[in-house]
Amino acid sequence: MSVRDDAEGDGTPRLVLASASPRRAALLCQLGLPAESVAADVDEAAHPGEEPAVHVERLARAKAMTVAASHPGALVVGGDTVVVRDGAILGKPASEDHAVAMLTSLSGRTHEVYSGVAVAGPHGVVSGVERTTVRMRPFGPGQTRAYVATGEPMDKAGAYGIQGLGAALVDGIDGDYYAVVGFPVGCFLDLLASAGWRYTFTGLEPLRGVP
Image 1 (cartoon, rainbow, N blue to C red):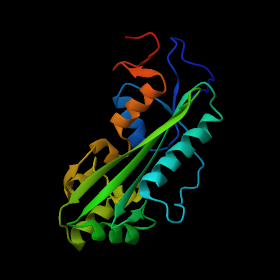
Image 2 (cartoon, rainbow, N blue to C red):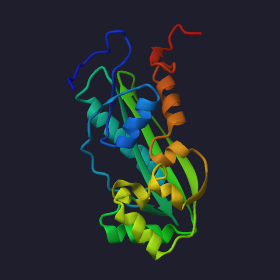
Image 3 (spheres, rainbow, N blue to C red):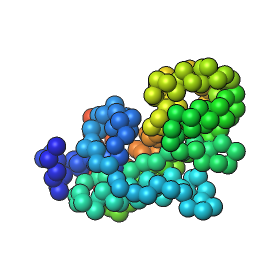
Image 4 (cartoon, rainbow, N blue to C red):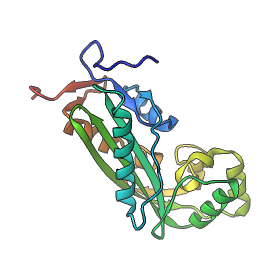
């Protein structure tokens, strides 16, 4: 896809997703807001003592601003999601055994998902965080390893995908489902408004002068 440094021909902003995540890209397309995906080269390690909400918002902002630096004139969307169990941040598993260990620690218990999102562009950068509580069904070693063997958990925080086969492991949630998927839609739309754009179901239009 070619890179342009201005708005689209109809005056709407060009969206760039600072992520290689197919889930975030799919959610933007679902909203009628297709975006060019550009992976952000950002160190995702947590700072010592960093709270989960601070961590995901910092990384969402860093990703958005890093990509925005090479895409002037565009609206650049960054995101980051972590699973938190007993205060410990669970990122993506490093191996299948690591995924099994993560899932075993979540079985039959409640944990939190923190999902940060940021929008960077000519307006500067705005960001926010959603926190959702997830209750997991009890599942044993055989079911855990069978799920890990599908490969689905390997690129997901907490080693499960609620929008995929991992739905079979989830008992319920309290909060934003889309935040658990990895992209808090409501928070994103609020941030767009803060940046001066209104979502119209068919695209975006400037808020200035709009009643």
